[in-house]
Length: 135
Ligand code: HEM
Image 1 (cartoon, helix red, strand yellow):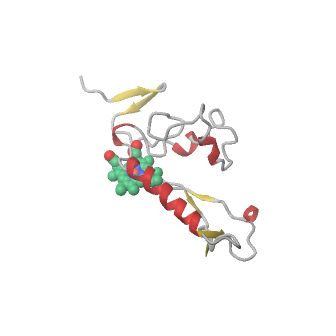
Image 2 (cartoon, rainbow, N blue to C red):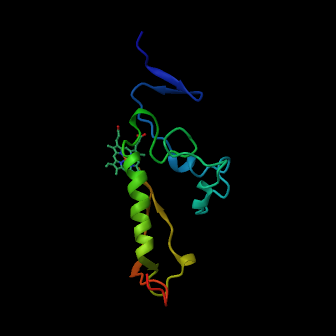
């Protein structure tokens, strides 16, 4: 017998329906995350509560999950910390004249991926080391 719908979390999903998982909402669910809207990267370092990003912990799935999840996780998990670390190590990052962090426009634009409405502009200043440091 051909199936023309399936039941998921109490909802009937007709065959052929395109489903998008709202990863944004999952990652900001206050039932899972303390201060979900605060930028607190250290939350991922807490040993007993650390969630994994490789598709097994469904409260945090930046790369998706299952058979169609991002195949570049091994690449990204190596290259991204290296690239970000190099940028932070080599430059001081400042905001354009007169702009304070609390006045930045953080409005978001709708889409399949979330983007800032107003692009972030920052100025890299080559880092010359501490005064008196020869490294
Ligand atoms: C931080 C960087 C990245 C993030 C957060 C990311 C995230 C994702 C997500 C959420 C998906 C959809 C998974 C799903 O449908 O469940 C995906 C798919 C995919 N990603 Fe990435 N990705 C990243 C970088 C990359 C890179 C660098 C490559 C290639 C070199 C790549 C190649 C792909 C491909 C080919 C798919 C489609 C897989 C499929 O449909 O079977 N991704 N990625």
